[in-house]
Every structure is written in structure tokens, then in C-alpha cells.
Length: 257
Ligand code: ADP
Ligand code: MG
Image (cartoon, rainbow, N blue to C red; front, top):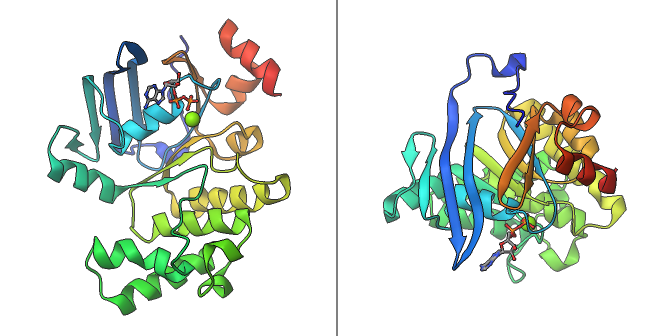
């Protein structure tokens, strides 16, 4: 297995923010994650790809504790994931997640969707939460949509709202699970552009499950290929796409490229 840690200058001396050691998870008898080792540096951008059912969603859902695991350890920003509600809350505060389906509350305005967590979870004053929400709506280029409801927005706009909503919680890590795969082709770029800016301008630590190879080549420090619950290969995007080492990776790339 190729195990190249990215050697990008922007990661020089960066501390480890996620440390996953021999993580194993089962759904009943089904061994869904097998001996996952993964260390992520602050500001590192990781793209995870692999066939459907290989465990990509399960892995990133373990990182913010949407899923439990049975063996191994997982540390996020110095907090170990054990069955302790305080730890789970601490992790959820630090890790934002954007899903394939945007999961906005349909009966709340965009602004209300963005301020819900900051007001009720982080106990921020409403005015402050709204100011932050408007800042991030500007960042994702749709401040004029603030008072509309999700159903009045396009899919691409809703996904940008979902990204802004995560940013309002000031996460240290952002997880994306196929954020563009439910979008019409003409909306994919507007969402990817926002994600590229987030990586380049904010230096956000990002783990993104996606098969968007253009995005991977542009921003990823490292591409990880999963198959059947294992990390099969990982490398810089250039090496990964142009010179895949493992048979299973080559077969996968032939299908998607
Ligand atoms: P991916 O995101 O790579 O497509 P997933 O992590 O969603 O893969 O799923 C990995 C495997 O685990 C699949 O075979 C899936 O059917 C199975 N799986 C996912 N969630 C559950 C669950 N809640 N209960 C049982 N099996 C599950
Ligand atoms: Mg998935």
C-alpha cells in the first residue's frame, strides 16, 4: 500500500488534528470498516473516493460521532471519542458536516436555518448570530436569499446554504459527503467553487467524499481510495490519478474517468 503523506508546504509543521488508529466497525456481522489508520493535519484537504458501499460515508460519520465504532481509537483536536456525551458534544461543535441532501429545515428561512445552531447550541445573542450568518451567506454568494425558504432556492443554492450553516458554527474540520452528487450538472461548479475558496482562503481542514476529480486535483493534498472497508491506496492527486499503484484503484479509475 502506498502510504505517502502529502508534502505540501502549507502543511509544514502543522499539527495533527485527526488521529484514527486501527478503527474497526461492524453493522451486526458485517465488517464495514477494517483497521483504518488515518492522520490528518490541520489545514489538510483530503478527498476520499471509492466504489459505492466501500464505507466512505461510514468513516466520515464516525469522525463526528454520527456512527459508533467497536474497536480502535479516534481523536479529534485532542478529544478522544469515547462514550461520553460531553465528548460527543465537544466533537460535534468542532466538526461541521455537509451531506448529499442538504438537510435544511424547510419551514425555516435561510437566515433562521443559519442561526438555529449558534443561538440554541452555542447560546449566542441573536444579533450576533445573524451578523455571522450574513457574513457567511456573502461568502457563499447568496446574501439576497436570506429571507427565503429552502424550497424557493435551487439545489446549488441550498447546498451553499448548508455549507454556510456549517461555517456559522466555527468548525475546525469540515466533512463533506458527496456534496454535489444530488445536484444538476450546471450547479455542481458553483458548489465546488465555494469549497475551493474555503480550502484556499480559510485554510479549512477538509475531508471530502467526492468523485469530482477536477476538485481533487485542484485542492486535495491527498486522495484516499477505499474499497470493501479498507484504505487501499493513498497518494497526492497527481500520483493517484496518473500512476495508481493498486489493481483495484486502476479498475475504479477506469470506470469513473
Ligand atoms: P459508501 O459511502 O462508500 O457508499 P457506506 O459507508 O454508506 O458506503 O456503506 C458501507 C456498507 O455498509 C454498505 O454495504 C452499506 O450497505 C452498509 N451499511 C451502511 N449503513 C448501514 C446500516 N445502518 N446498517 C447496516 N448496514 C449499513
Ligand atoms: Mg456514501
